[in-house]
Amino acid sequence: MNSRIYMSSPDVGELEEQYVLAAMRSGWIAPLGPDVDAFEAEMAARVGVTHAVALSSGTAALHLGLLGLGVGPGDIVVTSTMTFAATANAIVYTGAEPYFIDCEQATGNMDPALLREALDQLYHSGEMVAAIVPVDLLGKAVNYTAICAIAEEYGIPVLADAAESLGATHNLKAAGSFGRASILSFNGNKIMTTSGGGMLLTDDAELASHTRYLATQARQSVTHYEHTDIGYNYRLSNLLAALGRAQLTRLDDMIACRRRMRESYREVFADVPGVEIFGGENDKNDNFWLTSVIVNSSVSGWTPAELSAHLLLDNIESRPLWKPMHLQPIFRGARSSSNGTAERFFNTGLTLPSGSSLGPDEIERVLTRMSDLILRRV
Ligand SMILES: *Cc1c(COP(=O)(O)O)cnc(C)c1O
Image (cartoon, rainbow, N blue to C red; front, side, top):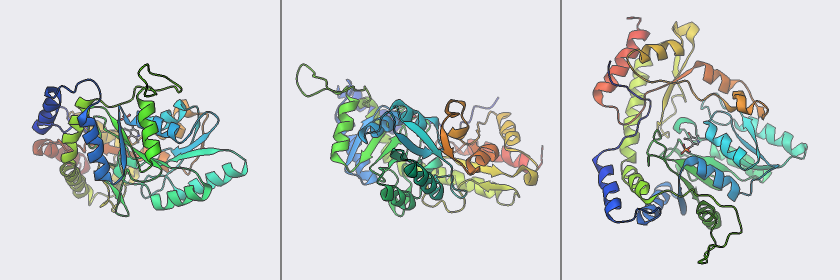
């Protein structure tokens, strides 16, 4: 059996080894240290924000970002239905209720028209929307121009979930720099990794320092540790920050690899009727985190599940797009505004190996295997 090809595995090598080893040898093992400070400064500079707080995960960043915006029990938080469960889970941690908005046909990101409709309706029924959390799906930045304008009209703060979109832009501005604050994830499968980690980015000094405070068990700065709030143990360790610093120096190269992967898929599917690359042609501002295809199987003659099974026979991983949150059993009771788009993407989409660590032989294996099915050589 050929070795397993994953959708998006960590891309680490000698440079990462050097950085982590240097951090270990520096003696800064116990959790915080100079690599955390440097990682925060380097990421803030890269994204173009004034404050960055390195945290143990993207989920932790979402949780503290929401708390920092004052979200709590009885509030509603409006978010994208087309996302990974972490976004919705963090809303529930605060005691607030998630309200799910369906996506645009063209991008899979939160539909501004549906958002406006939902806010209008909630406003007129006197309900309190405490935050809007749009999600940059698979590395394409949300239409922040439209979403932030609507949010401003209603006076609602935006916490942008940029977990998937580091390196992408909207109107020349970096993903991660929108809204009152944004969050990043450095989970193992993301565009860059700290093996596990996340970050909150903001231009709001007070929000940044409050996040730091809550992430370190809400200790008042007195020697006996006075506590006036419930805190969390959510900081990133110094060793992992060193890994993140190495990865950040390689971010643009890793994006370039993923972009080439997208282009290869585009070539393979160029003359295949019934198949579109998810997110459309207009992807020059994406970070190409994952490439998915949308399959109209009555035209193509094969289903996404058949393609997936065919790839799996050669030990190649693929996966449907996120199952929308409003269709998840755990959120059965939640309210949503849907137009059927997210559900259609879930039923017709397939995400393909997209990682930057794939070697030429592995890429060849994936492309040949796919062509076999597409060209009916099997
Ligand atoms: C990965 C991801 C998260 C969670 O990040 P973790 O670091 O795994 O906690 C949140 N939101 C989205 C959209 C993600 O893809």
